[in-house]
Image 1 (cartoon, rainbow, N blue to C red):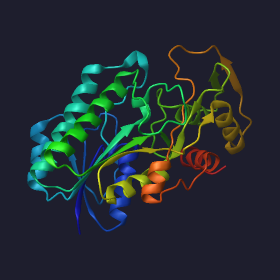
Image 2 (cartoon, rainbow, N blue to C red):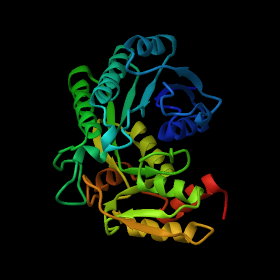
Image 3 (cartoon, rainbow, N blue to C red):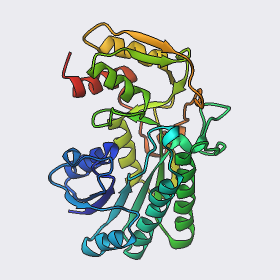
Length: 307
């Protein structure tokens, strides 16, 4: 068996990645500081170590004690709203933490390094869908930190021989995603359904995002983990969906009549976004296996039980 390291392993995406690696017969060392991740998300067959990737000594000790042969770096500090942005913490966790991991990966010749980035690096592009070589103009602290970490990943690839792939995730959703706080419209709507409250739509509901169900995001990550070469890839559905369409799918999936409330547009909304996923499809053969309707139904079933 091969031992792999997953960071942010008690979080939404990280815990699913752990499940996938274990199901394939691998050993997994799972690290998380439990600031937002939940211990109960983690598969009991993983080796769990509590600590922060921003702690250089902790990271070094993990690699010294375990024969790591590949790293999937999902840990990240995510701001739940613009008002709660914390640039210093973004820098410490999202940038310094990534550097700590890469230093240890290179020092121990630990194999492939997959970095979970975000389409937040694009900011609010003027032309969509946007490809990986499109303009990088992050407008929030989180996106700025992700861009900086990406640059360091490529730097380590060029100067230290790091074998990497970067996954720029779109709006990933599904079971285990935190649904309390401002963490994305599908999570927010799911919370409303759990409490049988009205869904709140800001503006005209025509804002567009590129949603991707968790199982498809994990499959894409696995493809990049096994892919030779080092590059950057969008990981998304590859087409935008409006908030009004999301409302439609929630209405179809809920087991009671949903009430919709419209409110004034919020400031600093990104508007319309979708990602071009041609590159990952042509390179790995990956393609999404779930449409938005089935993904929303599966998510509601997880939190509410089958309708």
